[in-house]
Amino acid sequence: MDTYDVLVIGGGPGGYVAAIRAAQLGFSTACVDDFTRDGKPSLGGTCLNVGCIPSKALLDSSEKFEMISHDAAEHGINVQGASIDVAKMLGRKSSVVDKLTGGVAFLFKKNKIKSFSGLGKLVRREDDGWIVDAAGTEVKAKHVIVATGSSPRRLPLAPFGGNIVENSGALELSAVPKTLGVIGAGVIGVELGSVWRRLGAQVTVLEALPGFLMTADAAVSKEALKQFQKQGLDFHFSVNITKVEDSGKKVSVTYEEGGKSVSAEFDKLIVSIGRVPHTEGLGASDVGLELDERGFVKIDDHYRTNLPNLYAIGDVVGGAMLAHKAEDEGVAVAELIAGQAGHVNYDVIPWVIYTSPEIAWAGLTEQAAKDKGLNVKTGQFPFSANGRALGHGDPRGFVKVVADADTDRVLGVHMVGPNVSELIAEAVTLMEFGGSAEDLGRTVHAHPTLSEALKEAAMGVGKMAIHM
Image (cartoon, rainbow, N blue to C red; front, top):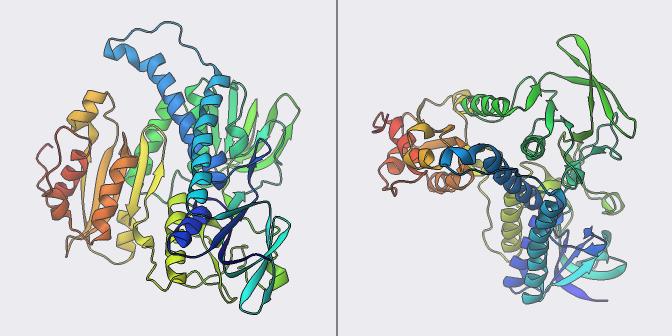
């Protein structure tokens, strides 16, 4: 029986990063992962294979098509007869995925990590280690890290199949549907709805909550909703789905809205109502691994489960279901096993939605800061007053900085606009080191850049903004 210092169950962002960091720290390491694509093992989990990466590839392709079709003329570029080759677009998306998943396999070889393709199951505790069924082969490991991720939440009224798809199916539509329904106005629903709206679909989004992006800062969610509605996305809130039927050609959806029963028909329906922890086949009950009432693996502040030398990270433990959160947890748990001070600062994890305009935030919203009893002050700066944004032809949105009125420490930064997925990193760095709005405002930023909007918003906290 092969023996390892560390065995990771799950090869997604949390799992593969944990394995690589463990190997870097000198541990003999193995990883067992059951994800396959086109019938072949494919490391990287949901994110690389059917989530973050392929969706961003399609978002980029669809944004380029919209720019060529509708916005190029403003730049003096005249294009006649632009059309979409969906098969080629999907092929490009797959090639991006191939490069990145292949890159993870290369890194495993480089770091001498043994890779098992198949299910990983906890079998029993034996002596000072764990016996794990790694894709049909029993191996022993002193430490085991569970990083099995999450799965799409199912809507009983609308089982996946046929014309009803979840995120992976929405990335593989062979043609642009004329009408597309999306149940769920969260990150996945809005991003995938945006892809197919740009390519020509009429998109209707049905959301159970009474408002849009209610976890975001109110000013950001209001601006984003306004921009998406201008683009043609049709949102309905406080919706209760009562019936879904797939005839094979169309999907009919009946829902209650404003006290009335409404029926709608779509060529395709995307169901994106969140994700649930994936522990099926793990053997949790067999070995006594504790799960909470929602099925997440229970851990302490150091990622330890109730069982010795058994850890868990990523989506399967709950919290923010973000790839970068899982990656940092993977590094932290490997370092903790090595006796180091692995740590993740959950207060400044960035959130990003890759729509157009993009949405990004980190830290406390203005309302959340007030709810904590803090005395706050804010600064806000529009991209319409930013030279680079105007040069790009995309002056939508703004940057908002929330700071403590007593200490000037930045509590949160919230953005909607061009390339804010990149701009948020500077704000996160500042907050990680406890920086103030004045620190940010007095830091020299290159001109002209989009990042100047962040600087000006920070200056606005102290009422020192120059360009507004």
